[in-house]
Structure formats: C-alpha cells, structure tokens
Amino acid sequence: MKKVLLTGGNGFIAKHILVDLVNAGYSVNVTLRDPSVVDILKQNLKSHIKTFDQVQFFEADLELDQGWSEAIKGCEGIIHTASPTPMSSGNDIESYLLASKDGTLRILKLALEQKVSRIVITSSIAALIYQDNRESVHTFNEESRSDPTMSNIGLYGQSKTITDNAVWSFAKENKMTGAITCIYPGLVLGPCLDARLNISTLYLNQLLNGAFPLAPNFSWPIVDVRDVSKIHLMAVHKPRFGGEKVILGEGSYSLLDISDIIKDKFPQFKDRLPKGELPEFLSKLLGYIDPKIKNVLGDLGVQLEANNKLSKSIVGDIELIDPEESIIDTVNSLIKMKLVN
Image (cartoon, rainbow, N blue to C red; front, side, top):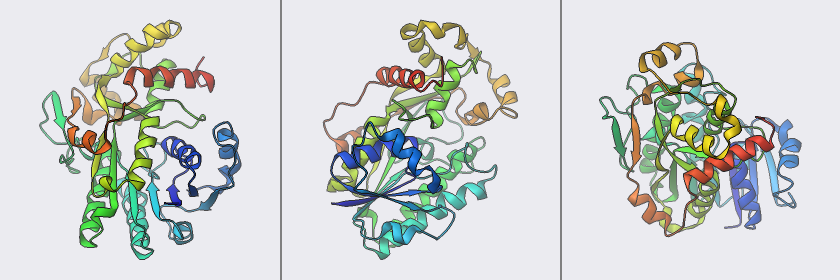
C-alpha cells in the first residue's frame, strides 16, 4: 500500500499517525477542516518529520460534501480519525451526528465507489461500555454494545455508539465488512506533539493545574497514543485486521490513581492534585455547570475493565507501553509545552 488518506490530521492521535505513516514511507493525503493550520502543523512536527514532500493537505469538513472525493482519489487505504468532541461540537445530538455519523458514512460511500481496499476507523470504548444497571466493576469486550438511549451516556458516548452502529450496518449492507477495522481506545495518553490536547490529556492538564480539588469517581483503561498509532498502521495493511473490532486499553485507572502516580514522580504538583474523592451527589450537581464533570456522569462509581483477549490475539505479540509510563510521559510533555509549570 502506497497512499493513505488520514482524516482530521490536526488531532492528537492523528498527528502521531501522520508521523508514523511518513516515516514508514507512505504517501499521505491529510484532511483538515481549517486549512490555515497547515503551516502551524508542519512547524510543530518538523522535529519528527524531515520532509513533507509525500504529504498533501486537503480542506474537508465532516459536515460538508466538498473536498472528500478529491482527498480520497488514488488512496488504497483510509485512516479515519476525524470526529467531533465535547470541545468542538454543539450541545445537541443532531450536531454531533451531522459530523460523526453522516461524515463517516460519506467517507465510506466514497471509499466504496473508489474501491478503497482498507478503512480503519478510530472509535472509542464509549461505543461499548454504556448499559443501564452496570455493576460497580463493569467488564466489556469486543461484542459489547453501548445503549444510546441510556440515561447519562452523554453526547460523546451517544454519538460514538450511533456512528459505530451505522458503520457496521453500512458495511454489512454493502458487503465490505472485511475492508473495515474499528479501533476502540480507552483514555489515550502519552506525549503531546503540540499544545492541542485531546479529552484524555486535557484531564491530566486540568489535574496539574488544580482544577480538581476533589476527583469524580470514574475509572477507565489507559492506552498510549504511540501504541494507538502503531496499531492503526498495522490495521491499514495487515489482512488479519479486516472486519475486526480492536479494543486498546490496560488496567482501570481513576483520577486519584493517576494523581498518586503523578505525586510520586512529580512531587512539585502535590498541592494542586485532588485531596480525595468527590461525592457522587456533588458530581451530579456540578455536572449541570461544569463540562469536565458532565462528560463523565455516566461513569460515576463504575470501574471499567476490558476483556480484550480477542483484540490482543489480532494485534499479535507486541509489547504495549505501560500505563504508568504513559502518564509520566504525558506530564513531561505538558511541562515541555508550558501548559503547566
């Protein structure tokens, strides 16, 4: 495979994937919603990419038709990372789905027309973990499905679930299931290549800047962004990934667990980190006014555990980065970017 389309090239995960694709010798078409960031993106990645000669940038918005057909032309594979987030989209499910579901289906239809052989889609464990009446320790696997009608699922989880269902329905209807792989990461941490944060690194940045005197009680598996990137590249060219759902994430870490690791390795931040757990009733009350708590209301009091044995068998015998190392590297990069001091 020689040419790959990478959507949402300015995202936290996408930048790592772009670096890895170029360094692996791929030609890459990169879509950006805002083309004015191209020079900034090149500047931020210049220490990781020697030349951008094999990279072309295209303006394309998930909510619009323009630009996508041209961006996909000539590509043998697609890595679709572009997605709305609680930081970039509106406050209703329709605005999320316009970009998330409709935008993804637009790409799949064009991929079908242009006979693209491999499509890798970045989803989230949010599409797998939400069901009513979960136990305090909730184990999920590749066959788990979130219920988009569940109370407190949140707009992000709802849009990820509806989009994921639409992807697999489209694939089945058009006999292209074997061409698609969906990747479901947990909390994605690791080194930031610039100051643009994802949801997971934003939580760490807020921790380090004292935004959580008390921490809401939720626990997610952690995966390093470098491993997420590596596995996206594997999925775009290794046949065994075709038609598979791949969960990425180890352990189950709460904000207090993460804080304890930071306190041990970065004692200078001790006074800014949470002093204890935020009671659930206060979390629910604050969720009405605080977006960073509202986003996790559906996870309060739940420890998520991934039973991803099938995913590990598909990925193969590679050693993933330890979550503690990911946390430490995230903090170091936030310090380096002067997002915390």
